[in-house]
Image (cartoon, rainbow, N blue to C red; front, side, top):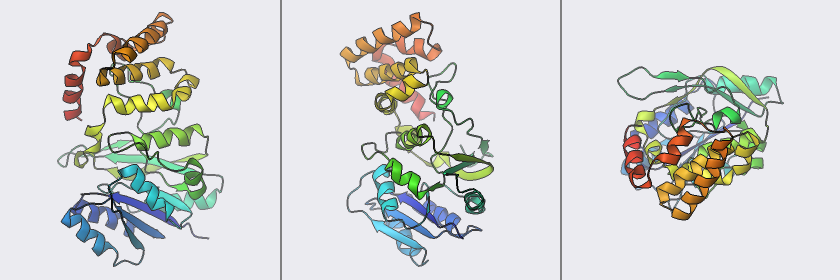
Length: 305
């Protein structure tokens, strides 16, 4: 029995990069059942041309959205029309190594209890340097949602381009449509996926190529993005012993918004955690960094991503 992969590629203005992404899927050693390109109301001529070109392959379908809704809505619409039994979301400027689907199919066929698969990925920060292989393990929210030792960044390394059985996507109801390109909508979906306890399998191979230097979404993420995550998933942070981290993110977000009442409230709550010894260096940084210089510091940090 074959595994029927439905690959959804949301696009906006990726141009020739979209062609490379599509070809990386169509040229897999294990052929996809279908490739669904969701054009999110792009007006870019090259992107539109490539979408028209792609449908010359019978496995490809293009959904033309009339109104731009952002990646979460585009991805959801793509999978709502998918007919395969395994779903895979792929960013329009990234690539699949030629044996990704073959490796995933082998796992799904050999063990029906496996719900989703993840593996290593190649992160390319520059077209002029060799990329870095990232092993996203361990898949443990108590680690992944915590901050790094000396900087506020999360210790999250898992990408959202993981093959999963159809029933998993449907049970989780896809990505949160209230989160847009400036939010970490893909990470929010993964939090729900991991917390739900679905059975995963790690493949010790490069399953995905993230051409980070080409994308702009990473630079759009602000403290408000993480504020939304901490607010929505407060109970998960608390369950995993990360109440102080959630408060830290809520304080960062409040400073970003210059919300004086919430700044005062979260400072008080965070101070209680500090008194109990529940903090890291970024927690102290969140407490002492003045709101007036917070935005300039974040903008500088974002430009260096």
